[in-house]
Image (cartoon, rainbow, N blue to C red; front, side, top):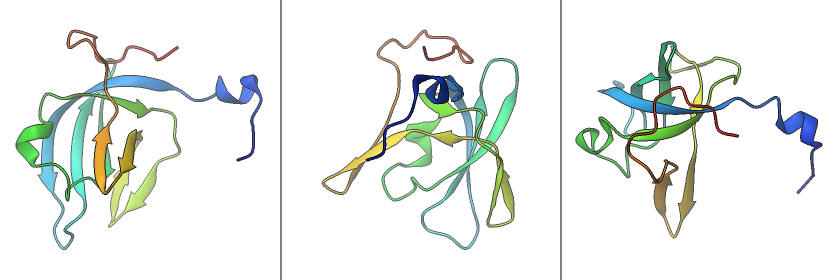
Length: 109
């Protein structure tokens, strides 16, 4: 894997988000539309996590997102960020904080 300079890494805006709403996206069995509070605003993110999570498991979950990723249209919906997760042994695990009371919008440093 290619290495990057620390100054390049500093350009990535990682933040804590709190999932407020989860919607089905018609015509897909992999995608959810998430409404996420990132402190100073609420964002819509399209995430391919449906095979691993029920909607009810996600509401209220504290997650880590890339906040300054260029918006991308997915299935005609503009996604303004990306949640971080890891896939292992066909199991997906969303990255989160180890404390429940970390405020939405907190920067990852």
